[in-house]
Image 1 (cartoon, rainbow, N blue to C red):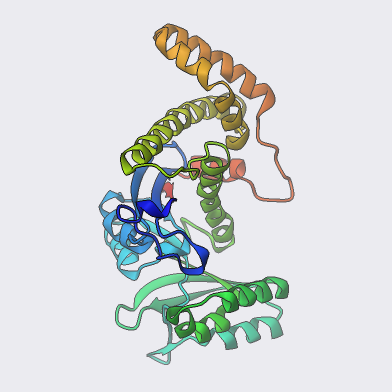
Image 2 (cartoon, one colour):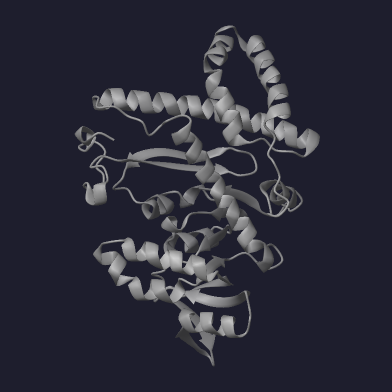
Length: 334
C-alpha cells in the first residue's frame, strides 16, 4: 500500500523493505457450507492472536477450528475447549510442553524425542501433553518426523529472520525444527491420529482463497489515492468477491450432490472475472434472467473446471466425504 495511508492503516514501519501502510484482512469460513463466519479489515498492527481471542464467542459446540500457527493462543484453545468445541493446531515454538512422568510434570525435550524417533525408526507417535508454564492445558499431541531437507529449510528460513523475539525463541525452534507437532482436544473416537495431518492440510484452502483474491481479483493492487477512494475500491472488490464466492459454493454443492465431484476455485474465479460484465447485465435484467445465466454457467463449470484428483494425495473430496459421514463434528477454517 502507498505510504501515504500509514496514518489510517499503519504497517510494520517499513522494516525489511515492507510497506509503512498495510491492511490485514481476517477471513474465516465454514469448510462444509462455504458460509462466511468472519470478514474484517484492520491495520497490520492488529495481530492474528488478538483476532483469535476476539472471535471465540463465534465458536459453537462441536465446531472443529483449523487455524494457522500465527493464531496460536493457549487462552483461545482453552476457550474453545470450554465451549465444547474442538481445535486442531500446530504447536507454537514458544509454548512449553510438559509430560506426566512418575506423578510429576516434566518439560518435554523435543530434541531428545527426535533422536529417539530416528533411532527407533518411528515416523510418528502420539503423546498426552500439558501446555503452558502456568495453564497446563491437557492435549492430545501427534508428532511427525520431517525429512532432513525440510528441517534444513526451516533452519535456513529462521536464521534469515531478524528481531529480538526471533532470537529469544532460537533454541526452542532449533529443538523442534525436525518435527511437525499437532495438538488437539478431539477424542480418538472422533479424530484418529492417522487423520490429523491430512485433516489439518485443509487449512490450506484459505491460502488458495487469498491467492485467488490477489492474483486474479488483484485486491492487493492499490494506487496512491486518498483513503476514501482506497476504501471504496477495496470494499467494492470484496463485495464482488463475496457475490462470486456465494455463487461458487452453491454450484459446487450442487455438483457434489449430483456427481460427487468438486470445482476448481481458481479456474472458476478466472472464468467469472472474464464474464463480470455479463453477470452485472443479468442482475439488471431481473432474478429470472440471473438464474438462467447462473444455470448456464454451471453447465460450463461442470465440463471445464472440475478438480483434477491426485490419487497419490489425500484430497479435499475424500476428506469432505469422510466428514459428511461423521455428523458429530462441524468444521470451520481461517
